[in-house]
Image 1 (tube, one colour):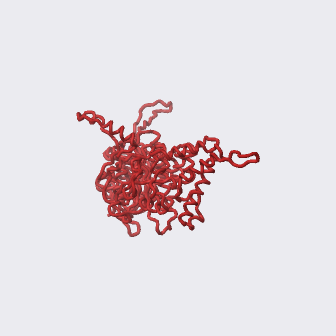
Image 2: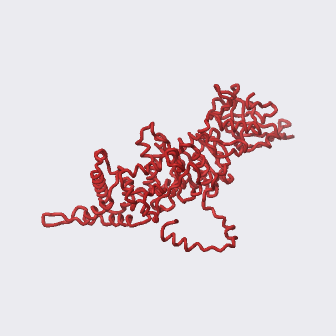
Image 3: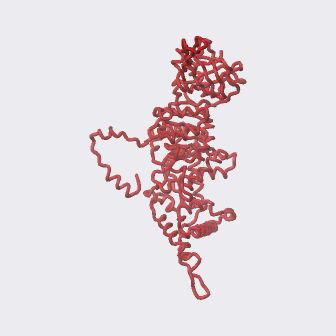
Length: 582
């Protein structure tokens, strides 16, 4: 017997109209109608034996029609007859087959047929709903390829599994307003990934809220703060420096050149020339002749920034021989503002992780060590260090944060790009608070624009090199549209802002646009999941992660009601002055 072995008397009603993927069903059984709810699942008989069409209830209406009966040719009305009709609008989402080849109970997101007029329609509930949900979750997926986020809201007895390969291959979006359970969902996802023996993911933790997520397979790293500038062997301690020489030419000019300065073109040209000279000097001194033949201004080659500064100062003061004695050089006085900006960056201890990195970060082999720290899976790491790397970026200045996060992501992408295909180990980049560094709108030449350039390339080309993106944000309307358009999986928690709801609505298929109406009324920890990884567009209740992220949600009233005296302000002022939370 098949899964949907209904009896005729169990039918909700019969099909009255069909329009592509939309079906109108007339319902005669009022008892069954009262139990029916919007977004519940139904099944309709197909024209093929052993095949059924599965749909979602979109709208339930009752139409009343008054039929006038005329008594004579004068048109005088004598009686009126009132009839009622109960109609259910259903959106078809796929086909269920009792048997397909050697497999049984197979659900496919295709519509090979449409129901015939008068075809019977049945509600999927009770044991049938549980069996159907389990069939959808498990079919075609090996144990390793199943990703569990929680349980179906329709049926708590059925665990909701996603196709993990498609989820990470084809990029994903996790969105939700503050307090909706977005960080909770991200933590649950990371814990699931960390269970795998060769997991490989990087989570950009912008506010340090995932410091509580611990366990086998998870390692915490952090961008060095002002208090870490004297740390030696920082990589061994999980402290990351990101030296200036890892920045590309465009990124350096974005940081150092004021585009409004009339001398900006000269400054950019001189910077490129002096950086190339400094890199050449480093390669020649180290005997790296193989790199020396092909390097460019963007090549990740160490160089001495003080050498660059000295050369810029020399050119800014240069006097050359003229026909009537000494005269000012071509760049005399034109680099002063540029030099001042560079000196300011060099003296800013908040940027010490980049401008004052330890000597070991200036060695030729240091990039390989950094890359291994970021990109190796669990089995390649030292015992207990894990394949899920959570990078705390909370001490990075906000004005430079987009560029640093983007350059780390770009570094990972570049290493994957230059690695032979058969040796690539896939890696996922989980971008928490993505609206801060993958903005929808930013000025050309700004730090945000530079960061966006890197992430757009990863979104468009990452899949072919084994780099996946998971974009996490509370404001999807402020996240770049190009990046979002490349994401084929959506986990949408409660969204109360109309602009954010519209972004999700545009990402949903036309036939599922009605799902967006649920966004403002979802419970905390409840999500709509749609995309390539989910055969069935689903409403899922996310399971509780083992460790709750420190998302910063403070219980105001409870804290105010606590009569314990506190004096933490002095410590906070000290930390502010030291620019360090440690």
